[in-house]
Length: 285
Image (tube, rainbow, N blue to C red; front, side, top):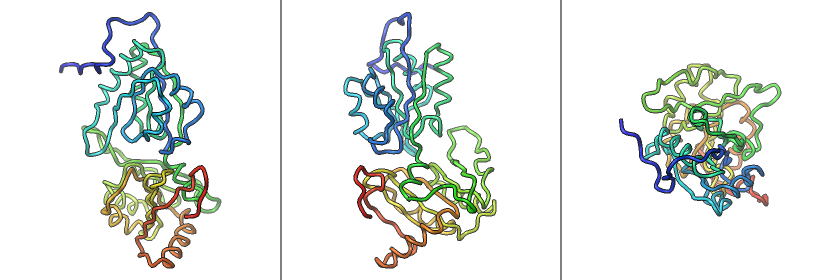
């Protein structure tokens, strides 16, 4: 198999004696003002930024002197092969002192960071990881609902049914039981499988569920349902990346949402779009 070509901007002859450093930086859940201070400093210093597809353009504005190279992965769409990304990172470090690999959420959670770290290690390229706010925590803040609550849920399961091409399905639901809060990443396209696995592990059909799209952004939308009605919600059009939260910790919030929806004449499968709770200036929804 022939090797993929280098990005035209990264063609170089030879390597410097001291390679640059690759920083795997978490871009957070969406809103630019949820970046860490360390992430901001590195973006300002970056010579080149390799970024995911769903990164808010406002975040890239914090890297004014950097070349920006999109290497995003989107479900059901053309994506950049991971091997190619690894090769580009190594090539960039041979030419530039500060290389940023900007990943949505936290790099170490469902971000394929380990594959990139392994490739950098094998090539002798120094790296560092800068954590970011993962979507589960942002969604929890968005809802005003703690994922753990005394007497209700002591455990949180972060999982995804999504696997890469030629990868075994695995036991992605193995840690789930009726007493846990479950947060499913990249699960809307596999809603029937998610429901099947939840029911098989003792989670009842009337357990509350909320689907959050575009968490932390002004276009944030929360859709309330139950495990039994999740498949119907998944058939609705999505406006952006979505997270599924399941568990008894949602009961009070769901009751409040249902009362609000009843007052506005909305149905059981309620869906609301409004100003995010995490906006710089809080407004009523």
